[in-house]
Amino acid sequence: MPDPENPPPVTSGLLSRTRVVLVETSHPGNIGAAARAMKTMGLRQLVLVRPRLFPSAEATARASGADDLLQAAVVVESLEAAIADCGLVLGTTARMRHLEWPVFAPREAAAWTLAQPTSGDVALVFGREQSGLANEELALCQRAIRIPTAPDFSSLNLGQAVQICAYEFRLAALGDAVPPPVEEDPLATPAELAALVEHAKRAMATVDYYDPARPKLLPVRLQRLVARPGLARSEVQILRGFLTGVEKLADGTLATRRKRDIGEE
Ligand code: SAH
Image 1 (cartoon, rainbow, N blue to C red):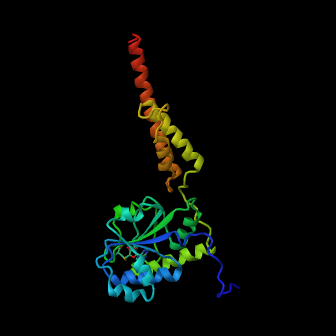
Image 2 (cartoon, helix red, strand yellow):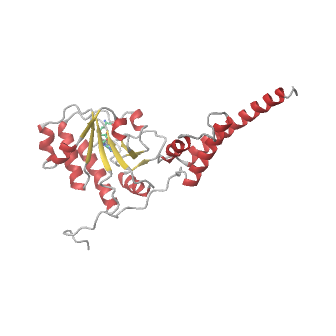
Image 3 (tube, rainbow, N blue to C red):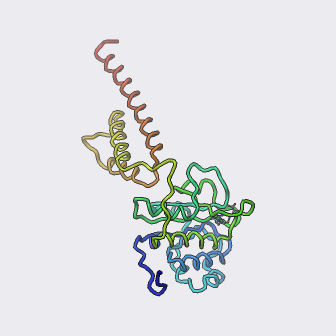
């Protein structure tokens, strides 16, 4: 039996690197409720994108002692700024939407996050009380989270949605995680990403965009680009197919030009 006085240490660091991002919250009370939900679960980083009213006495009241999180909250002007330095971004939505990537339940999302090969910060993004997150905002997220609900009543109060997600992240961080879900479209492996970088460099050299004799920062930047988490194997295949097409086209064009130069045409 776990001893409630001596809980096991949180070893994954997941809680300290997970931030909650609230986008354009209308009711300051919900910001306070979110802070309270976070603090009970050991999350500390709160980022507010254009809150209607903050700081506010109502937020402080609803935080019920989690006002240290409110004081440390960072207010930014855009979702892009809120997530700029995050390795993983997960957006929450109450609606069933057609999205290009899987929609996880919070439990699966926490297990998936823990299984990703990144130690960077993780953003959990929550939308507006009235309208949630826009599709363009969800498109900035690598995965979506939907809290399973009764089919005809899917919209939770913002603070309660934060509570449920934070709780599942806490369980996962404490090592009580379910196995990560099997993804239909698996992430590319490091070897596949390295092959993509090599292919891109080759194709870029063929079209004179890149000079291997004077590489400058391009190889490093390419590596950094593909190392951003979330690139699926199928996406790497699309890019490589495209690069092969560019190479073929360039080869054909160059061959024609060479023939012309030596008078064969
Ligand atoms: N009417 C809005 C609901 C907004 S509720 C809509 O259609 O999207 C405010 C926020 O709480 C949502 O943007 C989301 O971040 C969170 N939320 C509420 N219910 C949720 C659910 N079932 N699953 C995941 N997040 C939920």
